[in-house]
Image (cartoon, rainbow, N blue to C red; front, top):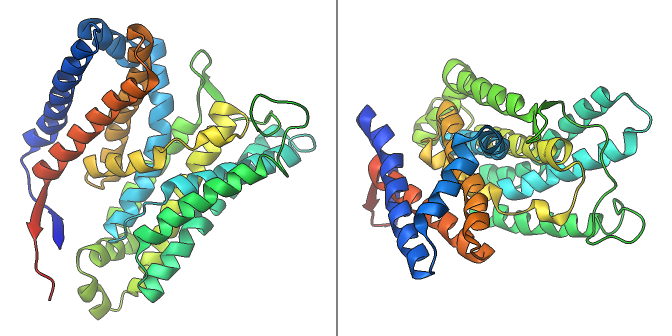
Length: 351
């Protein structure tokens, strides 16, 4: 059995570890681009300009960082309780479905602002309910949450495929199945990029999660349950209830991310919303060391990677698969560097 535990590190390592991982990934990625007959300098210039050094590029980075921020903050909370929520992708889909349904049904009769509030609320509830299934199974029946959340991710995607071909299908011929357009949308902060109020929601929830985790009784119970479940039981904390609540909270934030995607970014629902953002958010949380405020910075970093990779592909005319391989390479180096820098990894014999 492999046991992974956080270890104390110097403040300088917190800064140097991500920088080193980026540098290693860029070197290896550059070698791959040379092998593919592409100038790595022009590729990486487009990467940086398209994600950081130009105003439109940085705005697009923040658009992507918003979704990572919401899901990774929730994952950080469940991780702190000792529960690995691999189901953010499914919870995100559940939130998107409910937000779309509420918006489409009510946008013709109620004020847009009220529709947005109701849709976001239902998105959070949908994500929470989807997460409570594995939460209850883990908390009260000791069923492995990794298995159940992965199964529910697949089920959520199948429900999405069905609902946009059935109850939420846009009438008439379409290039691909999709819902009717959503006219009740989140307020736009920057029109050219589509940056919307979802960013404010994400930052506010990250700050709220930090205050809850480190300044409230339930936050203390979450941290103790994750670090020492036996001690938590001895103290009468109700470990089962803490596990269920942390999973529900994690799912709610993933559901909000789904609501932001359809109400703020896309303005309709289609099966292409499921592109693995929930899985990437697990790495975002890991890089942030499950700290809600650290998630803000880590989300911007991963938003940079995601946004920059698209510009790199356009500038170099590489295939989509190749550009995604480079993106995955960066994720891999960030993950490995983070693991060996911030965590102690030991092989433990299981009796």
